Image 1 (cartoon, one colour):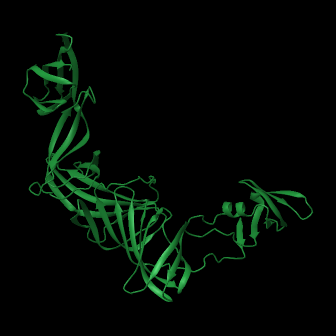
Image 2 (cartoon, helix red, strand yellow; image 1 turned 180 degrees about the vertical axis):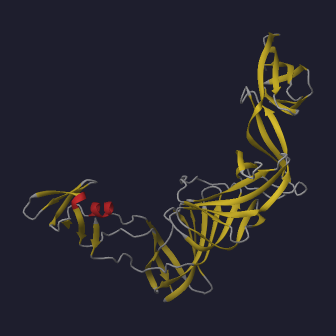
Image 3 (cartoon, helix red, strand yellow; image 1 turned 135 degrees about the vertical axis):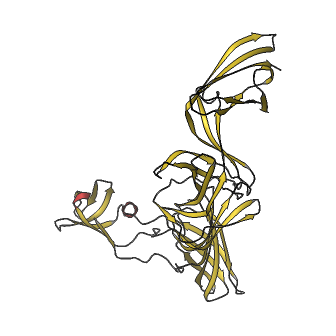
Length: 447
């Protein structure tokens, strides 16, 4: 179905669409800050101007405006953000009780007053007062005398201004928008002996802001900034584009965050996920751990990879929050996915522990074998944990038992460590194809 209009002019005074000195800063929290310079045409006195080509997700209350390089006085008196875009539904709704013309697929012309429009049919009243219902599937063309007032082809800021100058001025405009977010994506490949990890990182940038940013200076901020109100989350849509044509980001500390600046221009297309190299691949020594947490999973033992983010170990760089996928190469060279986990923002020299999955050949079981009431407020409980290693090599299993209230260990058959106020920890060596049994007694006191 074709929709035509006799009038196509929408705006009073157009702004120049092409921007230069475009810079986009993207945060982890569904926020982007855009700065661009455009040449805009002003008339002396009070006038109106349309600043087009802004994202549909713009926060209009965040707009800043300044004249670049000239001593001219231009003041924005009033701003209106218009986002009522042209669509068939909007045009039909504005033409209720107005005259339109329809042409069906056989070339027959219908004219009359539009009474109703829905997804299935159009209802008209002709000049004689008769009512005609025309199915949308039979309509080839709809003619409207003009485009209704208030509809625009793209989101636009309308400014009412006061100027002491006639002519073009370079203007720097900044604003915030939602629909821009980024996270780190890491790929880790374990060595054959599980003692080394080759780690590479990508910045994955998702743009659903409603605007394409062409040839922009791109900066990423890693860190959690305080927001007065969280903007709604946008679902990821569109194509993932891998971009590794040049070097990755340059990193530096900025205030209490970390900033990553791309040393070349980049284009962030709307409804697209772009991935750019975050840093060159690096290797670090790692330790494989077996961890039993009976309060999380009473029968399975977790497998984790632990390393220190230090230069001595091979890394020593700020690691932004993101997902880590862990792989290992088979004998034929094919990569096998072992598991994935998320890390928080991790500064250098901090430990990182990645949960990979659950061990197939290592199992565990916990039982409370005795419970004795000492007094109204004191109670003793005895626990037994059975750790079974069905592997052909010895391992060490870390047991992390969560306890509650005020407690004290009365007895244990293995050395232990009080990790914190609610966690008791054992490191238990278990031989190949052997079973180890941990027994301990805890006294609980109610205050």
